[in-house]
Amino acid sequence: MSEDDYDYLFKIVIIGDSSVGKSNLLSRFTNDEFNLESKSTIGVEFATKNIKIGDHVIKAQIWDTSGQERYRAITGAYYRGAFGALLVYDITRPSSFQNIEHWLKELRDHSDEKISLMLVGNKVDLAESRAVSTEEAKEYATDSEMLFFETSALDATNVDAAFKTVFERIY
Ligand code: GTP
Ligand code: MG
Image (tube, rainbow, N blue to C red):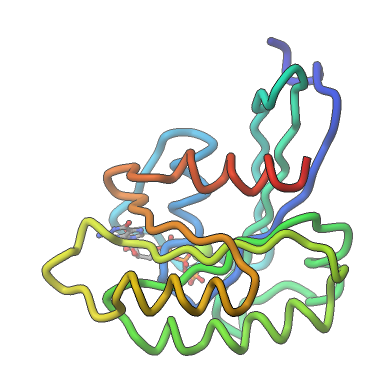
């Protein structure tokens, strides 16, 4: 399958606090790569991957920026044209879960109302350090009309499933 052989192109964005694992989720999904010592993202990066949904090939274009204000991309341009968003927190860091409210607000201020949203609790490989329960996060996702997955970019748990589910929902 050639890179340019696709039926639809859909942009999605990844947002969430710094170091929750956004860039590693992206590299795991698009290149099956993980980096234990990754540096904070500066500006915007994006990667693409062709995925098959039903009888069609979707070109998934995934945008990633820093969770740190000083390294972030221009907000309006980042969200423009996005069909979906992954809102990521770290299951070992409750503040990153509480800040999802902030990310949701920014998203709603800058994106289309019909954008498909997914809450992602990353780093489930660190089960012994878990500080946000699955039940609490699931309930929050339901109340805010978001899909929900718990993932690990490190061991690849649910990474494909989370991205594919967002693109299926858009499609
Ligand atoms: P910013 O670009 O600063 O916003 O951070 P980010 O959200 O892109 O985080 P990044 O992917 O750079 O990961 C931050 C740190 O967490 C790195 O040391 C990663 O190796 C680590 N990390 C990412 N995902 C996982 C995971 O699923 N499990 C574990 N144990 N560590 C992870
Ligand atoms: Mg990053």
